[in-house]
Image 1 (spheres, rainbow over the protein chains, first blue to last red):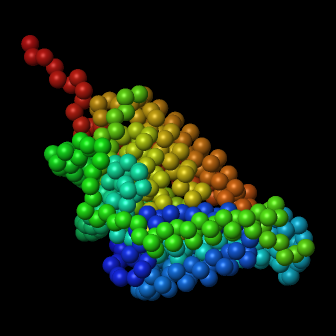
Image 2: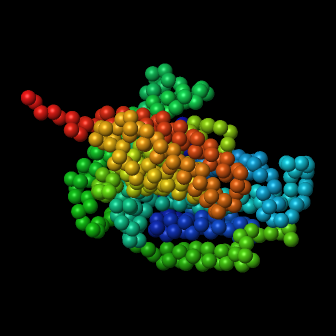
Image 3: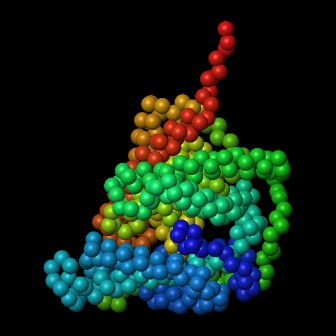
Length: 276
Length: 184
């Protein structure tokens, strides 16, 4: 079912939940940028361990993220296989040496390739728990409010708040339309030709999109009636001030990112090379 | 260009992003290449860019792709987030010329829209996405260009067929400008 897989915010009372949404977003951005830039295995392993510690601290249950996590692992495996299929010697190109472990010819398996793909896996896994944590511990309304507190135009904050607010509604519409079309005898999941699949897709998208266009009119008229956008500033019901813990978290992630990148690039390359 | 940023644009970004996120899950596997599929959300992005212009389109592409990935996959592939915005900006820049709202989306406009759409997709998926993949994730070149080519193919099909049909239908719903004629 379409809706069941979606991650959602869940109210809990841990210190991670009490942090401001902006703190968590900045943490997550810096964390993923660091994870993206570095290919240093040592740093990636430290990050992976920290990610899981943070994840455990947020007291997120397996039921909340289990299905999504399985999907991530599936994608990860597919991606690793694709890298091997397309470029079985990328590891040798990067690390400069070649240690054949098994097979021969084009698809000979080298230690360098395994190590390179191990790094890709680490890169993927270090970011995942932090993303999951951000989604399940951040209240969308509070997030929009604290974005504005950062000096970002409240139009942007509001657009994001509306997006998050209407995801469940649009999801419900989607399911309704899908069921209605299935009731009319249109099979949605069968394996047919490309053209037929496109046709089926359009049978959901047309009604969904046009009802959404109506919704845009209704919502924007309502906002206009209430004088949205009249003033340069607005107040927020869900706004939250940054606390000591917020500053500590931010200081930690900035310091961590700086140190991690300094170590990564200290030898002039983003790769950690155990082969020479 | 007189692109006004008002309430309607804010709401369009919000609802458009919500649509984009929901449709993240409604995709048809296209080929065996991982992470490429016929994505119905591309039709939504194309539609909103063509109607509301580049700013709304780019915002839906960026926020929608990042949030959609995070909500459904728990991970954000940044090198594929930004090309989404490139595509939306390309399509959106010419939004006035398609005359969708004025009810004039016809032969000439359809050709223009599709030419822009293909160019936008090429810039995004054949050029930007693989280059970013290599720069950010150091993935093998032939793999990412392969994935980019498939994404390009899938997206031009969705944007070309569904996008064109959606715009055509929406253009017919709205009143044609200058459609009132004086009674004799």
